[in-house]
Image 1 (cartoon, helix red, strand yellow):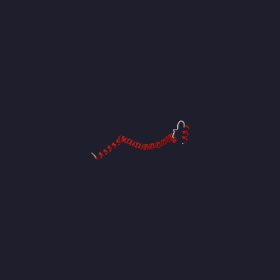
Image 2: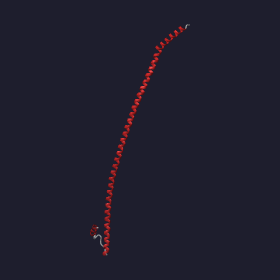
Image 3: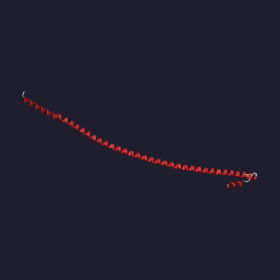
Length: 156
């Protein structure tokens, strides 16, 4: 066997194998690699979209949280205002009730004072009659002298 013929046969077999590989094996491998590269690119694009959507969702949630806090603060302010208003109304009602009670107490005191004065007048009249009776050493009839005693009460 000749070394040249072996070398030529190997070169021919190599080219046939290279042609066969390029014709039948290489296209499916390249297609699979292209498909895989496309899937990776699509995955990266989806990841970028997901990241952007996450940022948007984060911004929306921060905005919603801020709006909720504002609404909560507004409701709290309204509640505090209403509480203050209720307290003021209660104070006003308490003042009216206190004034009414004071007026009633003053009227009752005035009536008690009048009753006390009347009682004192009666006692003074009785003392005056007793004193006059002792002075005159005789009895004065209270019924007979009722007009005189009434005038005496008015003078006191």
